[in-house]
Length: 337
Ligand SMILES: [Zn+2]
Ligand SMILES: [Zn+2]
Image (cartoon, rainbow, N blue to C red):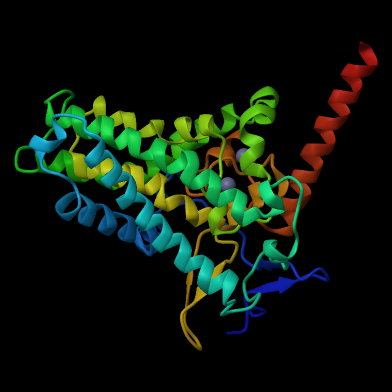
């Protein structure tokens, strides 16, 4: 597939799409129903449908019985850890294998022309982005994800919290399930802004930003405190009436779903002429430029707060002007002091 019909490649081999990224036409006034309907499939496809399907398999087939969950025991805790780890290995591993190991599409649609494995760096354990990322993913990421799940399943089994059933509250639970990706993005935006405060950035979030050229395993490569904050959005299921299936889906949107922003490719080719969009560009730009796109680009939070970069040349200019003004202000303050 020719990636130069929908984008351009610079001298360094970095590819960028021709079309600017657009926020979802949901939070706009006046409402734009036709645009909304055209956008709607991309809310579900490909990712959220996959994460929901995984969560349904987890809940209906791979979660211990309610009686077992009433008492916390190492056996089922380790089982849930293994089950969550397995989906990450399968999902991230498949993307890594296809795009970064076998390089099935070379650098087609790849934002950064380089492959991280060819550029060892001292910022990573064992100088390897992948080894470092994998140690952090399974060392603290998966245990913390599983700990949230264990706690909430245990609360559900013991009747603690406003848990509801689909037979009694179908409309509410379906609506709640439908907006979970939006809630996740809003929560992510808030904690993400928080950990970009310089002192917290240095202590916590710089770990995640070591991967300037992110690849699938970078997704959950975070400091443990960031892991704790990252999945804390799921605690909403102890506040609003919910169902364990939705709680597991929420954890999966964050956990398995973290890979969406870190694929490093704009499209994944599925054959000679087929490809699907990854929606990775907004977060890729965050890894590249740090102080843009704190949300994932679906909600217009960055647009409202003046930190939006839509990936276009005009977006570059707005960002550079903003950075320049910030620098001038900082210098002026230094001059006064
Ligand atoms: Zn990231
Ligand atoms: Zn960040």
